[in-house]
Length: 287
Image (spheres, one colour):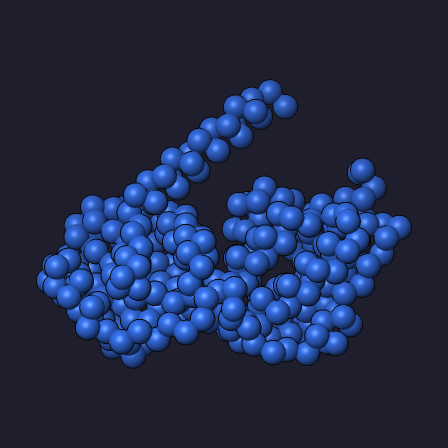
């Protein structure tokens, strides 16, 4: 289509520009086991901007090789619009549950301080709000490390025999059916155990597949959300020709839609298996 190449190029340029800007705002202080996020003078206008920034934070943590960090967040002149707050709070909560040894915040505006303190009271966490960055760094140095494992070492035993029953390959149609029904990921270790097995089985076939996934009764606990999103993105990038999902919760669907956009993969979500099979058949017929 006319203009398609320019549109893709512009999207890539915009994404790279966002990423570069985010990276300049992230520092990892190895001696303190601390990741510093500089939100100073940053404008979180909407949920999309929040997702972009937190996606990059999660990617940088994954690349760091450590699962746990202290977080220091500088809110100096940071502005978070009312429509961005729910997403900002959700992504922050997920990040803390998955990777935080403790969080310290500094230099928040009166409005931001009030919002953080209100959420801290209702959600029962320590706001740890200090006046300036220097005071925040001193506070981080006083905290006790809980780091024990790297991401590569973190595992939680799960039933591998159960994993095998959840995969069904249809070589004649290039379909891999994944049965996630009543599966529950409680933490990052559960996620890594399952996706590691799936990726190993796919690697043995030496080909990509159309993924047909049942998610009825599928649960991802908050501490596992970030790792699930990361491993799902890696699976789609490395092994999928396309994807059709059914039985997703609204929250899971929102996350999946965002991941699909990141990897530029056509992904269809349906309510039932019959609808999903029909959608996948339509895709195959177009090949």
